[in-house]
Image 1 (cartoon, rainbow, N blue to C red):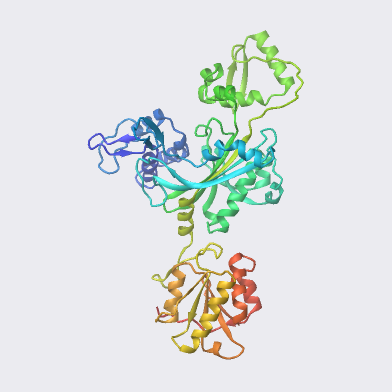
Image 2 (image 1 turned 60 degrees about the horizontal axis):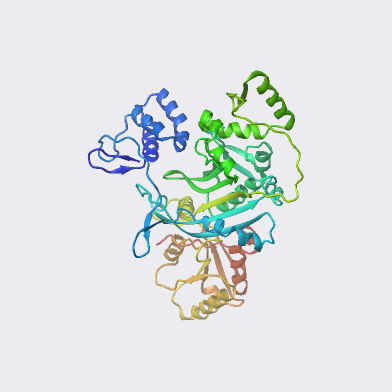
Length: 509
């Protein structure tokens, strides 16, 4: 974080830098060269070190966005809430920053539930806490929030997925690390092709990314405002092999809503190497992980050649991700031996989808906010029927006492069919009541009118988004609405089956 040097107000450094650069990007006075420089810098902000941030603040002469005062150098800040445990207060504790730890603690029991076999998964939903420096943007950045996480444990040597073939042809919008660094836009990929080309690390990670995409779009996220952004190597956790964030475009910009990571688990020796405490780590620092992965991928023949070259020449040059590194004998120790394995112990890899419920809800609300054409005062929420709190409304055309028996009978039939509904028999025009139900996202409306009194008894069914209505027998409506709400029928099928009700609804509100 950084502090205002005069009044002490604190700001999260990466967010301040991002906001400042985006403001400069939209400023007509900013030169084209400067804009191109900013476009290249923006994707790297999440992976900046403290020194990188300090240099960026200085280069762009950034001040406090509130007071315009000078800012301090970036300082580290613990995002976990600390607390005291027990009556004495001597025992220190922290509020959980994620829900997943409960699953890891119970790993042994979960493994027993699955008869000691991999793969298996555990899921948990609950509140998490992070000591945000500057909470803002409604549900987007808060100190207490709801998370839902899945931990899918699998064999680190076999990350195939039995159901991946079902999603292989799914189109998915991928913003790869290469595209970010090159300043290119996200690209559409077939999920199967992305895994085949190793853009996505493995089938299990790809499967969960596909299911996340289906989940978000089914519940109302606009597919054109959804992308999966790959973490850059300098922002990825040391234990992660690959990590993608499902991001939704909102009025606040691109917001991370779901994280999906391949948390490849290492033993203590591997952890030590990956975090840079071995010789390779000290020499190559942030590139140590890439060098170790390169060496691990070599075949036995290639390792033998490498060992021979090291002994003969004293050093060997290797190229990893277009960078050249020099290996020396004290960095690598290659041994060849045979062993008989009776019991193989493995540390399972973990694929972790992590859902931010509040952010998903906000994105859905914003993506489904609509304004009626030609009437800016008439707004509504176009939530998919499957998540709408009420599936339909029941509206008598007027307060005519003869309508009441039909309203009551229809309400009981809807309840029996397990269809949540709202009866609106208040005064006011039918158009005004339609507008009220539209505003709270009710997808269907049943209207009892004077034709309902005639035999056979019928009523109209109105669809919220198109405002088209059909007339159907009252006895058909409860199951019809139920199938529409569950997605077993779509509105076009209903239009093809029942006669269209031609009378235009009143424009009065």
